[in-house]
Length: 105
Image (cartoon, rainbow, N blue to C red; front, side, top):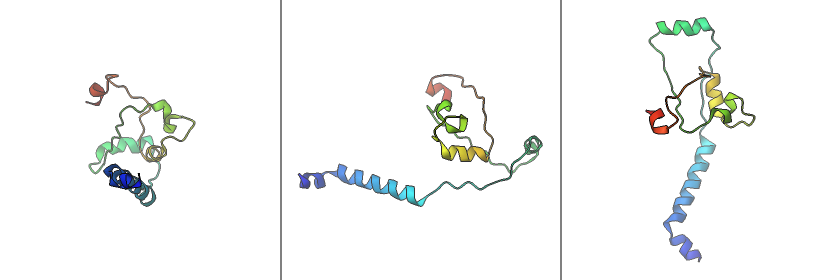
């Protein structure tokens, strides 16, 4: 039985996947540089700048009511919470469709 286990390529794929996950979870962290808090006037002044970076985080089938960012009691999205703390969060958005293919277009 042990020989059959080592002869199967699935064993090596699973072992490699586990090693990759362990390596990634211990070596890398998402580091977002801190920035000072701004005011509404600072936001309005952004239209005059030409050196801005915009990052849209688009996630399919993620409910806002299950994100700690929007008040869910469990810390389900700590990285997004940190990112939102350093950027602009849109509290009210509207999708043109409830169907994924149409709404992601």
